[in-house]
Image 1 (tube, rainbow, N blue to C red):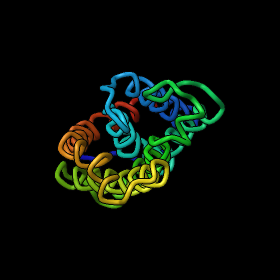
Image 2 (cartoon, rainbow, N blue to C red):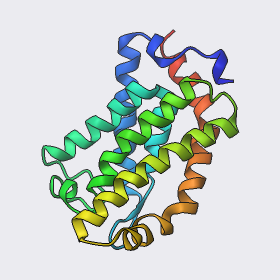
Image 3 (cartoon, helix red, strand yellow):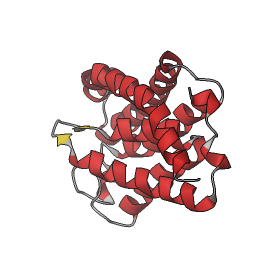
Length: 185
């Protein structure tokens, strides 16, 4: 169980940096697995953000997502729509920022006692909730939508798939952390 494994913060700096880089790259790849929808696409980025937090921990998981968003901010077209910097100001901007918060929240909850799969799933659900608060809020602002319309367009179509992504992250977290810690030996 996760409670028997060391936290990634206890890992040596090179192993932590590799983990951060790996999850930045995982998020880039997850953006490529995309189904275009309006106003925001369906991607596997929420899964990547949750996994980053649950495996790397709150700080390093959030840092991996911050680097991802930072690369977009400097103009690299790494977002799902390949818009680069413009993605941060369009309807997806809140979700991109939300990946950072989702990784932090899910990671923090796992670090503080979400030892069992169902507890990690709840940590993932909390991460998804934070992601939706930021994403839907910015979607409403950027598109001039009333909140109920933003929820209908930017949360409801994704709710069941994102709950499934939280379950997948919860199931993979223990093995992922064990693998990352093995690289620290």
